[in-house]
Length: 267
Image (tube, rainbow, N blue to C red; front, top):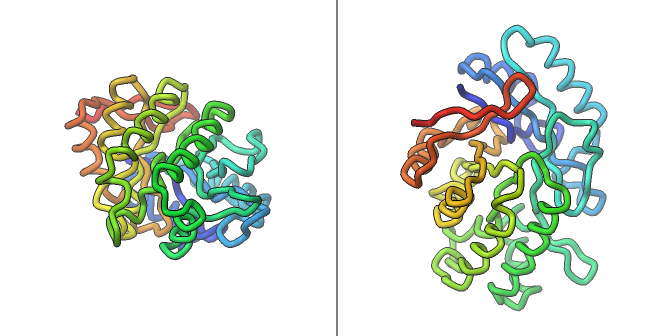
């Protein structure tokens, strides 16, 4: 089964219209697809959907139009700092894209210059920054219980393009491992996100292999996600991600089909 549920479109910061992406998915043998436009964030309008009602209307139109060819699901990527109306969507991806410090929001992943601003406001203290990020994100996960947890260790996005601050830092891993253990038994699905690989920032998916091992030890559910902003990357890196999961000990992943999460084998 080929599926993807972390999919962006021209309603937010994606390259393609939803219909263009649906047609690509059909042509490439997908059995289901979910759209997950960035939920509205009133403090930052650069990346989020500003026409949510039109987005909902369009995805529902496509559901009906292509119902005999592919299952389409209406999702949203909700930011930890700005909740959406959950009843409007088939599923929610819960992600954390910002730091909030002294009343100002700092984007984590929009570009490297913005991330350097995050480093600056935390005085380049990686432990302080990591604790702040994971404490906020995990509190959100435990309170909100989104259906899917998005790119858990997003703060490491730029670690391979300049100075390595996190992935060679044992103190960082102690913090990240502590926090992922705190949510590993929550009834949510953690995505194995290949988006940073397709955009040239990373060689491996989120979460890092060390964090994936903790998810495996705790029996957590995982799902493949390409964080697609371009239809050409709709299942980017999935074959390699499956190999990584098998090497860690996973024998199954989850997908959405027939309106519920389904467990499928990756042996």
